[in-house]
Length: 438
Image (cartoon, rainbow, N blue to C red; front, side):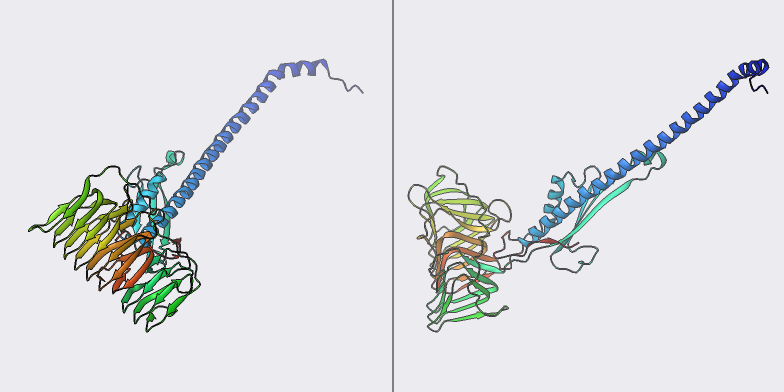
């Protein structure tokens, strides 16, 4: 049997070959089209995945910014800036390139939160950041715009509740009440950093009334003295940790020169106005003068800021810096029936500070509020390396007055309050940190 290919078959195959090759070519073309279509879909999926990844990244970035903005707003509230918290939140968002009103960005700040579990929580603030995003691939099929949103809620930290702080950390007496004086720390407490056995001393028929007292060392009550603590626990807390200076980071720079030298203001039938600037040799206001201090920083270089003789002094947005020139450091003396009403600036370098004592001043310096004077200070009296004395019936009537001094002695009545609201002051004491809650 012959299984070979006949001549006829060979000729038939040769005639059919071009069609076969055409068939194979057509098959390869179909595969190429299919591969092309598959590649297009694959590339589309990759592109879509890239856009979705971008949206996820943008939302996470926005969430980080919203958290930071909420914390910033809560810190502003804790510092007593109830009107500045929204501005603070938007400023922080802007640092992350989410500027309210630009590129479709909307930053909403609510206090209290408009939604969520903290709508009734005091001190809670909500920040919502929204920015529209368009996916280029999806836009081929749809004109929909994706609003990427991040929301965060923070609660302001609670201050230590102190309105008086003594910074002396030696074994001496940091806080002294004597000679029948009555000291009222209304709805606030005192912190004493001295470590001695009489770091807090109340004697001579005197009375100290406070919501709390925290003492690094020990307390001594004798000679008919009395201490009443209204908070919980209702006793003086001894052997406590040192309380931090809330204004330690405030930088002080002193301008050169002397715009005024040995300035003296006496009685005049009309109100006299002074401008901020440098006062070398001191500034003395006496003899029943009526003076208005324009807003700004008053640098007292050596000498004294003295108000005596039943004079009246008023000023808003004022900080008085006690510093040195060529011969010693300036101090403050207010007395003899004078009436002084001053409020600190609520923003800027010296926010919340009425008096600022140079930190390089010696601890022997004494600032006195004496002689039946009435002082209405809204803000902090800050003398971290100098002593402060209240005596002879001095009264303080402001709703927000803080005192930070190296040591403080009360031999006359005094009253302090911590209802600081928008005064720009910083909380004294171990404040619980502001925290994210949603």
